[in-house]
Length: 268
Image (cartoon, rainbow, N blue to C red; front, side, top):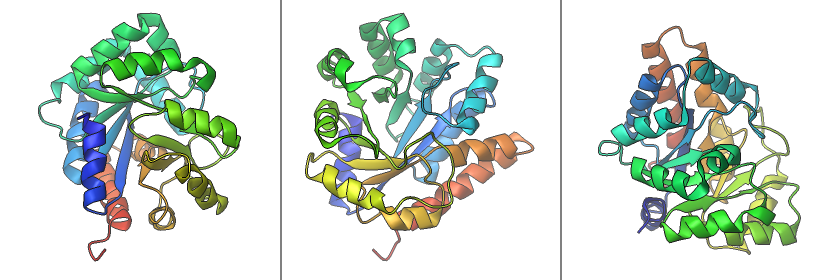
């Protein structure tokens, strides 16, 4: 069984929700990325998204864009990301998911990219700029490799299109909480819960919410309707603001521990 499917099977059996963390590879450097993979795994992250830096990301807000820019200015290459994840493959137990622009996949060749990703230890990929109308070939290539293709549904996605997207998806469905870009927010829209209920009628895949999830109160709001939460900008900002690597890692670990406790209280 694919590691993503296995992890969600375990979580559902234990009546728990998935905590999915995001990091931008190569920020502040690729060695720290490897350490963060281990730290997030040890802190209890159920899945870890690893962003492949790209010069023109389609949906990322200023925090993640800045992280990508820093990594690229340091000379990070796609193969550096694969090598980093592969080095931690025998240590990190949480499934890893790549977040990559389709430009990066197309440039290498879709089949070659997926083969290298799987070899490195990735269990799936999120391709935010791949439209549903053009996703079937990549979905087919992924299915042949037991590799999961996670598609995004936004609040403005019409119902018919949402159905098409969830049918193309595997692993889980990435449910975008708000119209716009990634980034921390004071609150999440209440209509998000209605969106999740509609999607639940379309698929049995886990529904995981990202874009703006950064506080315990966000997690409290979502845990009855969503199967998991995705936290990215809040983690990346902790790294950006820290004075040194040790305080950065400590800050990320503390944030993740706090949010996991809110998502899966011990008394549940």
